Image 1 (tube, rainbow, N blue to C red):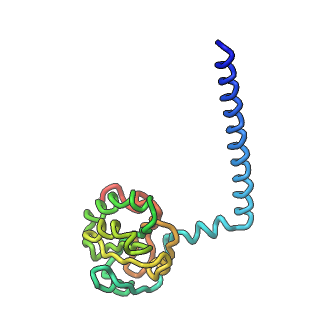
Image 2 (image 1 turned 60 degrees about the horizontal axis):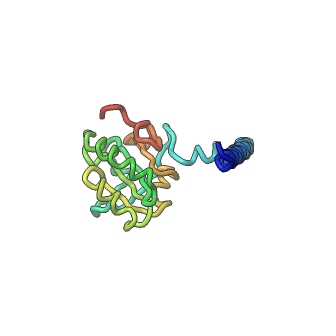
Length: 182
């Protein structure tokens, strides 16, 4: 080996070592902050408020669907499957095909399925177009009345709701709230 090759190998080795050191320092800092959040109880606060929990009761809400109809908790005629998407959320767009496929297979049709798109209507138009055939769709601001009624602060969120407004299941991943086959 010539001197240039040896020098290149040494430089790459030193850079790799420095990179490893920086990663280890960052992980150490993250562990410190995670511990501080846990001691302050903030980790549970954030977790508790990101999606509704089984047994939670949804407060009454009224919203206008994109088809002009009214959607409300009191207007439910059976259990409800609700999906919450955010217009600026890439995870929401990745979940859309599975949601549409699942919703098509549910009995009760679109009257028992609600899709809430949070954010500007123009930005979420592709989400609305994807779900309008399988669900009643509501477009609202990030902290709109339907999201607040359900206690949703994380997107996507999927909720199975009893007719009386009690949450059966909820999660940020569709697979966690649905059986393998509808």
